[in-house]
Image 1: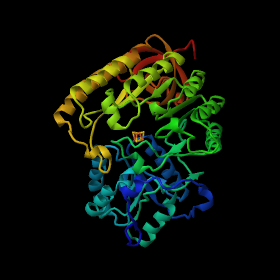
Image 2 (image 1 turned 90 degrees about the vertical axis):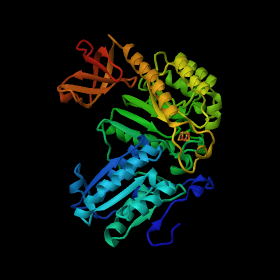
Image 3 (image 1 turned 135 degrees about the vertical axis):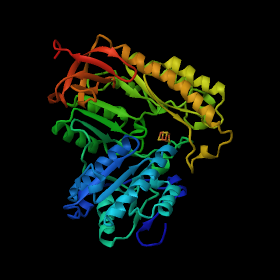
Image 4 (image 1 turned 180 degrees about the vertical axis):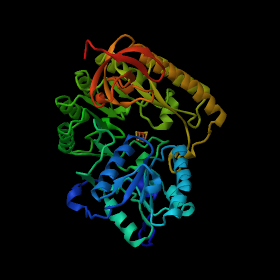
Length: 479
Ligand code: SF4
């Protein structure tokens, strides 16, 4: 810890430790000191990265609006600009540093503006050092473990006009009843757990989001029941490894138990992300086979197809395990759509290793993937592994991989040609007079319709299959 007033900086060494045995559950309403410090003030929030960050941003918005702030799209009008950041890849981190440089001019125009950086980037100690050194115009820095402290941190930044840095290296308690302002009117993210204990060798998440902690079963159900009451149609259960839900709870509730409880509730759609293949158990597969509101799509990150690379990544499964798991899932839920994450150019990846990844794709036939070129993250074991792959080789492999992945996207759309699918309408598409939304298999669908349908679930007959989306028309007979 930096001993200067209001400066509490992170340490990757401490973040690696898993010393804390028990996690308390505390109530935000009972601890937060909420004053009207935002009354008459505007905030602008930018979110980078994954759904966990989007969910955190919903909490940040909820807290800010409880403090009286109102949201603005225009940075130039804002009294508070916050970047909720990502550090999982170096490109995401670099984008944030670029933004901090660009935003400097708003500080020049308005010296009272509070410029803040939140989220995963500050949890990385070298990133926080860099912000402090290269961007002294940043007023407020906080991490992923203390979002609930935003009222106090902001009050100090506003009243004392001093720089406030509070980034904790150890996860705190689970805070319940956090206020939220959701991004969608009909779709909601619900955290079921926080953190990760897997320590895949390339990943910073176990350091930036701390130890794995499951929310109490009843608290999750209470949140869902409230969402149902408020008219939400779809929930996505969130965690870095949702299949590990409950392992740290005394109650022995499991992820399959959670899905079972959701299956019985009156909500149209239930999704979840992200799954770790090694924890995807047969019980979960059997619950998914019940169908109904449990949507037939699983995002199953496999990362690579070479057993040697998987071992070096510390993924704890082999490519044969994946083929077996996918076989069991498809047997239980015929037609299910599977997508994945893949990394190319991991240290030591040979052409033969890469060929194993392509071969796994041929066997499993994913219908989409997020593909990444490996980039070392400071403080992770893989950053010190030998035999880095030359950038041009990484690029060339990524290109070949994407070609195969794109074929999967197209194939995944073509199989619905002529069929009618239910689309939860999210809003207008860029094409005039067209709406867009997602099918149960998580396929993006565009179709002609009026904005009165936004938020509704509409039957759409698929007439065209593109690589990135499907086109269709409202199926009047099924409507
Ligand atoms: S499971 Fe692995 S890749 Fe996923 S968040 Fe945890 S450490 Fe990172």
